[in-house]
Length: 283
Length: 283
Image (cartoon, rainbow over all chains, first blue to last red; front, side, top):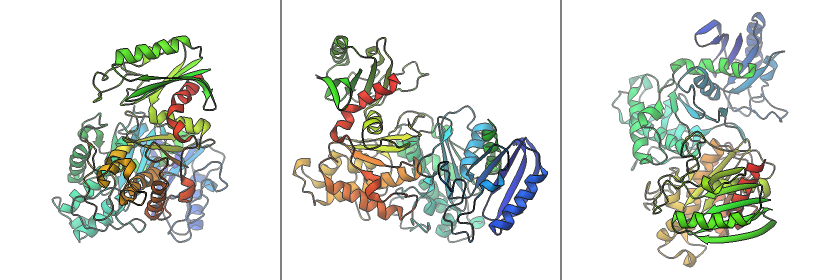
């Protein structure tokens, strides 16, 4: 039996189960102050019996096991949360901690659309753009964790949109996140028609990111999830079109339709990430 | 004792030794037809006693151990070389084969500027732009090998140069390789003054590549070598300037001066790559 905690910006989801098709209990807790939120999560975990714990959290996180701050949230604009130590949630059981998108990437490998692969990437498009890359079965590590949603890519010829990333302006996140699509279209996300050109621009930016991933981290498949991507098939169509055109057959072993797919777990890829990390910790 | 073979487009270098400071013998062989070239290399290797062999070759290569074509050169414009099996050079000793740039990356880890690190990248700027990425001590693998020199990146505002990559036009290689710099400057490489704006444009393209690597493969250091980079300090200066400006402090744990450096082995990084691969095979 596994327990998982997904820490999000507005709510935290505690899950007890063995996998996506065997969830025994799930409790949502509003994200307020770190003290109150972690205490509420700890109270939930205390009532459960489990063999391993996975924590999938918003970042940035210190994931360097040699660091004194391992398992802490680094500098974040979220008031009060900078420096919060998440390892205090782990008591007497094996545990693993990673970013929410890395958790989702692992979940796709265990139970979703990346089963049987050795290398893949998971991209989530929502309030931001997140990327989890797995190589030789392991999440890519190094100096920090992936922030590949902030890659610099070319825009469509003649595009003057300045992007909306507070750090980089027109990086991928600044061009293709939900807020970026809404800003370009000049309307609320739910009111943007499927044939609005904003989808084409966002799809192009994600395609450029995929081009760079294909030639760099060498994924055999790229799963594209998140609230903005799921339910908007025209976005996937645009990504595949621009990627095929951009790679021009170079380094591409799969047709764009096979390379670029929705997550096998759909909208559950995120929430299942914490359980997937627990499963890894148990192994 | 180790033997290494570096297969290049115009010549192949066979090296006997234990490392860059202990080279016992070195023989250069012109690259002609595959049959004649491989026979001449085999004749050299036959005279030597060694415990492991490393082959660092131009690509693309099939490096999938499960493939029937493992160790072969894939489709290449070089006449006659497509499909050439390089594993025939290995007889009765442990051997390793990889791309020339991946070999150089490993050499930098063993003997050069990446010693003691767990993740780093090596970029070579010459006739093309090559990238070797190491994560958790291992060359990044997946669907093929790195071709990250063909990443798509934004150009400097207002830049109309179309680039010279035959596949992608203005990908990084099309903007920052030796031929690209010469095409932009409109003169032979040796005649381009250090203050020519072509260096600034090339430096910007490489900086965008470094931005994307820093946030994706998470190198703790990026070594920039190759015939075009070494001896042109203004290029390194431009790369550092544009990278610092582009990252805007994001994901960057080192100052640009510490992150972006010349290879510790200098121009020997490439030739030492084959010995480094042999050393890995021996382990």
